[in-house]
Image (cartoon, rainbow, N blue to C red; front, side, top):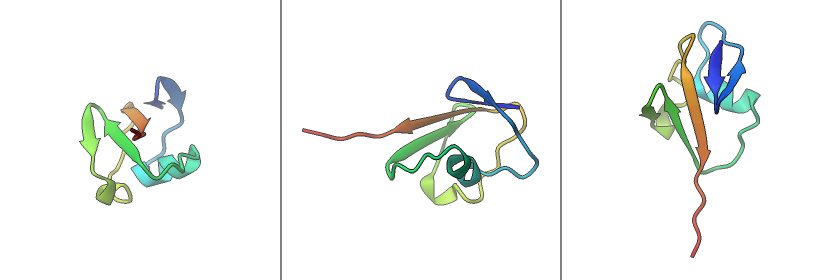
Length: 65
């Protein structure tokens, strides 16, 4: 199990950040992702693996004026 934005979610071997975003329907283009308090660069979402027990935070970045 992993925690995603405070909620328990199933984990599987080889789970990447991009797979998790797709499964959870995070489709907003401007996202920030932290895994265990470390920011994950958007260019690495497809390769960054999530370990069992990880704490993942996904935040929508919103700009305005």
